[in-house]
Length: 117
Length: 112
Image 1 (tube, rainbow over the protein chains, first blue to last red):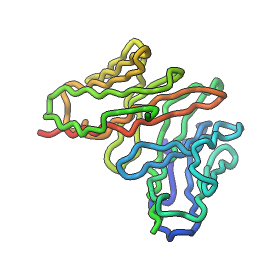
Image 2: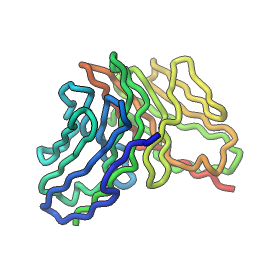
Image 3: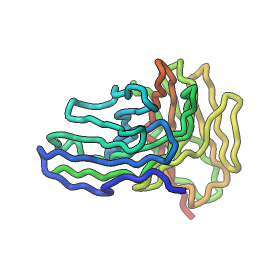
Image 4: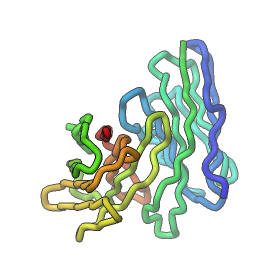
C-alpha cells in the first residue's frame, strides 16, 4: 500500500521567504509527527498530532514555525521568514496509535530537503 | 546532558564481524525503546523494538537494562548491507502524548 508521502522533495528558498511543506500520512493512521534533521545530526522533534486532540507543539523552535492537520489527514508545516539555520531535511511520520495511544511503529516519509540561501 | 546518548562511531568492521552499539537515556520514566535504521539520505525505518527480557531477530539482538538506563544492539555476522546509521529511540508516554527522543545515531560501515 501507499506509504507516507511528502512534497516537495526539495525546496530552495531565499532568506525571509515563507515555505509550506506537505505531508500525506498513511490512510487510517491517527498520529502524525514532524521532525527535522540537520546534516549529520539526529532527528529533532517538532510537533505531534493525535486524532482530534490538541497537538503537542513543544518542539517547535520558534513562533515562525506552525503546523496544521486538516480533517485528521494531510498536514502542512509552515515556516515564516525563513533563516539559513532552518536548512535541514524535514521528515514526517505517521503511526497507527490505538485508543490507549500506546506507541506504535512510526512510518516515515522521504522528507523535504529545505535549503535557505 | 542529552536525553538519549549514543557513540557516533563510525564503527568500521569487516564482513562477518560482530559489533555492538550502546545507548543511554536520562528519563527513568521512559516506557518503550526501539532501534531504527537510517540509510544515507533516506528516512529512518524501524529495525526492532527492545523488550526488558531482551529480544532477537535473526542476526540482531537487543537488550534493555532499566536499572542502568541502557540499551544495546548486537549485530552478528555483519553484512555489507548492514552499513547504515543506527538510531536509538526512547518513548515516554505522559499527559496523553507520546514523546519520542531520537539519539544522534551510530554509524556502521561494513567492508569486504
